[in-house]
Image (cartoon, rainbow, N blue to C red):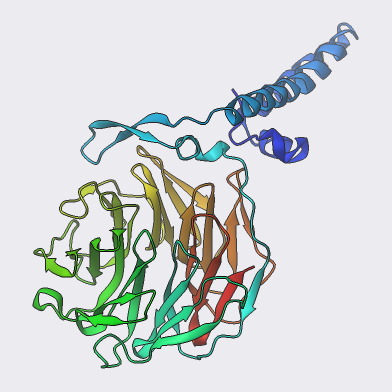
Amino acid sequence: MTPHDASSGDGFVPFFRHYAQTWVHAVAAAGMTAFGTLTIVHRGFAVLALAAYVVPPIVLYLRQASTDRAESDVTADSTETAVTGDGSTDAQTVPLERAADETSPEPERAGTWTIVDAPIEATLRDVCVTAAGAVHAVGEDGLVLAGAAPDSTGREWSITLEDGPAATGEDLHGVAATADGAAIWVAGDSGAVGRLEAATGRHTDYTAPAGITDNWLGVAVGGSNGDETVLLINGSGAILRGRYRDGDLSWDDPVTPGSGSSLSGVGLADESVGYCCDTNDGVFETTDGGDSFARVGPVGADGTLENLATLGRGDCFVSTDDGVVHRYDGQTWTPERVGDEAICGLTRREGETIACDAVGAIHERTPMAEWERADTVAPEPLLAVSVDATGDRAVAVGENGTVVERQ
């Protein structure tokens, strides 16, 4: 058995640290002990004892190095079989690095996390980094804060909206962008919903969609500008789907995929595939853009589900308020301990997962499936984090106008 995530590019020391936690190491240690005991019969057994312990990790390390070199030459997509919520299977083509996320080489990161001097003091509850590298964050009193995309003049921050899409000052809880980053959707209390054009800053108010004035706790967007699917979640466990086509917006009847418990997270990987989670350990998958959902939980978490992130079908991470992230691979849920505090924000790109917690810490997941805490800790709790597809820009936001950026 090859130890999981033993990438030769990370060196032998981190490989052996992970190997020491596997059953192969346990068997090797037992073999060494057994042969060592037999040295009372003949001293030649000492050689066998040493070989039983030393040979397995060397062989596995060299074998993994050979495998990594072979995989680096593969450029075609791989096909995997995903298990749907009803137990059926579906063959789908996904990038090789997504199908084998655990053995992906570590992506280059832009740098260290730095606290940004934002022009506000209001609490920011959600953030998204667009494909173009621009940032949009939302929070108290309908505030929408924007960070310009990187260019020769730097990354300037400005206030796009001061009091929400309907100018009523309702708190905003969710923000999401289209795949091309050209349109931004925001949602919040008392049915607040709005759409912003990234290029011009112009916004359109869609508050009280389908006549509903519930508090929207999150928003997800799939598709590109002008061909958009929008999902809104609320505290009654309902999801409302909207479809925006060339300026025309229509809303379906809301659906309740679970027991009616408050929904705490929602995400769309594209215009079809997405997930939502609730506070009753439920996770639900859609493959038709939110028209229907299938249960893929319960997760089996000890804590309450806080948020989620997804890259596609059979790929979902959910965070909890007891410091654990649970990983779904299309079949099973696997818990990973990140820390002891609530993991409020979670974001993913190919080869990388980032989380932020209630004490202002940021955690990055390594290719060895280990979580490392960043050196920079924000002075306030962090509530959301987002990263673009290339990893060039990552931003976390939180209470009292806290903004932390990886540069």
